[in-house]
Length: 410
Picture (cartoon, one colour):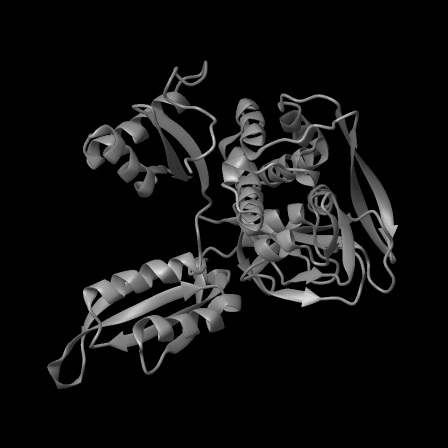
């Protein structure tokens, strides 16, 4: 079965939410269908227009979101409720929630808050909601199954935000682009915004050259300003991946895998090392039993991480285990889109991890709930997953006491 792909070229002028939306409309997304989906949002006081324009000789489309008195500072859970209430197509909903979840996770790490407690400032207004939900809707209108991206351009100097002057790229953009290849430009403009970075973080399954595809359309989404020497646009190219396409057809997220062999480490040392490595930023860490020279039983400790953290985690792996050597090699990763929701079981809040065709209770929350209630872990997990499915299957809304848009437990 063929798959349709949209490749965002952000290597020359970065990406913002309005630029992504404009590029998809410029590439042929039907505006009437797009607006029909956006009008399901249970918020008023916004408008959306698409203006043809030129940027350094390139014809482009600019998405212009108008807002009327929207001064609301929304939390992640507030935005989630708005998107859920819109009853959007599943893929549109999941993409939109994925982008806001990426924003909440990044802001939470920067401000030391749980994602559910994050207050959105610039990215919580009508314009950001329309940009993200609009871009997700445009992908659906175009029938896009796979999103890919080039390396991402960022500016330099400083920028102004709700928190005052910040370095460019901003801390949120740096957090969101962790592990994603970037290109620095000597321009004192915010080429890539947090909204644009979140779209790539949540939706793109690969970063690099244009994938092998049959090109069907392309478009340019314009930013507000004219830039010296470069068109202030994001390009998108859409088309069909070949019939023999496999995950390798589009390169995955570039990561680094660290490995070391240990024949003198205790179980306590290995368990402690894995926990510390994950807390230090590793995406995953695991132990594999092996047999070394002279028939010695041993273990391989493996650490999966973003390239920017590889050096620090290598030093940490040496310190934690006393190993005499660490190997490193590049790997690609393909991840399914995912997001978080919350249920309440026996008065205990439990996070639910959602991906296409699967829902799973967060095990740490299940353990905590089991300890607090005296119920078996397996029963708490089963009840949480059943409560989520029951709530989502009820058109009139979640049953009382089973699903609640509440922040995650501390």
